[in-house]
Picture 1 (tube, rainbow, N blue to C red):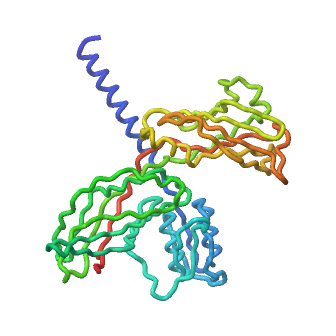
Picture 2 (cartoon, helix red, strand yellow):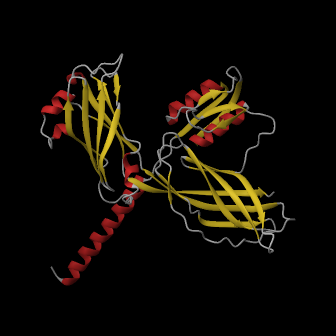
Picture 3 (cartoon, rainbow, N blue to C red):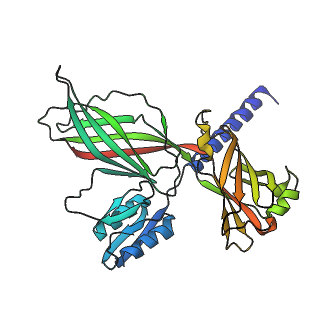
Length: 369
């Protein structure tokens, strides 16, 4: 092949690789589920039931307004857009999950207000508080805006960057404010449904009653999706299978899930699961890698699919940015016997690739204290 021909071949190959990389990145971005409800009359339980059916997210009803009917028009709304619209229509408000209390709708009270709100995919960002501070030994002053960041229950993010990026703020006089860039770090948010963070803004004259706009971007580290690995073989068959054989291994989205080891005693079982991830996703630091398995779970399902055995404990044997080894334990308990290994098949839930998700927000006419 001539030098000119070789150059054209390599150039074409590079373009092809570039296109494939772009397509892969786009496919990895988490896709928000949407809801469509168009009814002249619907009750709150029916609306929440339809929301759960279409988005997979359950919201408890603590309003006591079960019989009240209202019109509802939603077309391809994201989870948070849909839930907030249902709440407004029903005379309710959203109560975020706290501790053992689930995400719920409660009856709206006199004086309740809707703060500045922005929606982005599975995320809702609200500006819930803005405070002003003045230094008494100088003319300096500052504003602190508190952002509430919540995500759909079906999304299981791992980290939130506390540094708000590309912040732009405009005063009520139409002049841009000079916002200093602050350093941040990835804060662990796995196992949570929402969080808050503070955004520092420069002070403004006391006569100014509002900011014309505040906008920026948040960075969230999350799985592109959660994967479910359903093994066809039961525990007895898996114990007798080759450790690296096809019976013990499943692959989805380039993620390999393997039953590495089984210990099946009379009243206690241990199932060790190995995960291998391809290159190309977000690389976690060693101290962050444990979050890779934070939302993973192994359950044993009966042959007819009607019964489930949940784990009684687990141990993270090892974890890195692309590999993990976790052992799950199952034990007899009062009223629950393990029975025969041949009656149960493992079903494992684990994240697909870990990716960066950008969450933009923009607020208009922000009132000042």
